[in-house]
Image (cartoon, rainbow, N blue to C red; front, side):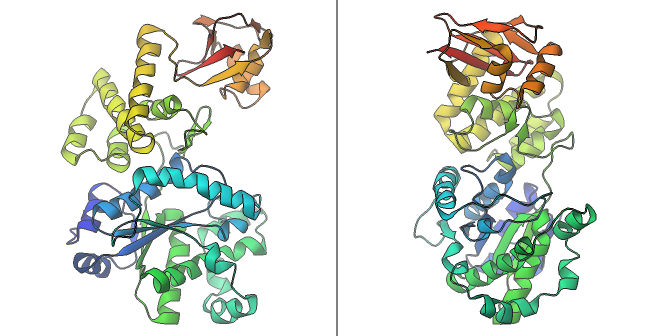
Amino acid sequence: MTEYASDLLRLLSSRGYIHQVTDPAALDALASKQVVPVYIGFDATAPSLHVGNLVSIMLLRRVQQAGHKPIVIMGGGTTKIGDPSGKDEVRKLLDDDGIAANIASIRRAFEQLLVFGDGPTDAVMVNNDEWLSKLGYIELLRDVGRHFTINRMLTFDSVKLRLEREQPLTFLEFNYMILQAYDFLELSRRYGCRAQMGGSDQWGNIVNGVELARRIDGTEVFGVTTPLITKADGSKMGKSVSGAVWLNEDQLSHYDYWQFWRNTDDRDVGRFLRLFTDLPLDEVARLEALEGAEINEAKKILADAATAMCRGNTAAVEAAETARRTFEEGESGASLPSTTVDMPTIPLIDALVALGFATSKGEARRLIKGGGARINGEKIADEAYVIVMGSETIRLSAGKKLHGLLVPA
């Protein structure tokens, strides 16, 4: 592990965030002598970010913990175009009202993890539509576009992947990397921003911004990327059996959020504790060394800490208690996901879809056929089974880990 002098890079390195740095020695020296404003950009394509975005938010939290200034850039402008990085197809475009509503909703997650204000290390949230919407196209081509070559842009993984798969990459999306580089230039001018951070898939975009600031303003800025965060089984962070693991409560219940972390693979426990909690590293080392059944206690600690950080202490306590009652006592906890049934009956297939345990009726049929559906603990193997709703709430389970409630209207 590289030895750093600054609290910032030491903290990031010790907890496993660093993959690439454009000029480690220079950034380390800068962070040792002054407050460094650091930005990460987030597009507003949905009302909530998901767990796959959490490592970037945690990066900004670490920046603030190390005494530096986090800048959250909401891509009100770039969301209108769409980032091709990691995408296989053209993204649906949103209008201004939809983007504004998403930004307002997304901000709540950041307020749980960062301290916002006017102080030198307080976080700020900025919408890049403030400057991108005012750009003249001819001026952009003349002043910024001339610093980019098509030859080099075609070498970026985000572009190569789409072209190799013979999937469409629109000219609109091709401009995204130019606008992201311009964001860095603008933030350098407005906020004295000296570093951009992001996932490893953003390396090419970040380097573009570093070079653009140097060429146009002669300013030295830096880029830092994190490793691609995947689970031990190779799957991407942010997904669960029943869909995306959203950060906002109105998109995913506290219980389901807690349960996502509780279901962490044994091999990921130590890494996730370092990345997604504030637990001291010596405590993380102790927990990840546990074996056998004891590792389950480490998973509960991870779930408690990660849920408390993103949803608050009360949510973590309630979710943990719901899990205890559900799995240890077989009761129906009040925090389980639920859906109200306003009819006397409901097909089991429809109930599984309504609770989000299956994304389609076909998937629900396969779940039932495979023996994964239970009503109040009793396995149901009949794909045509119809649930009769009385006056009592019914507990529906999918497999061993997903539980929900059907509540009579």
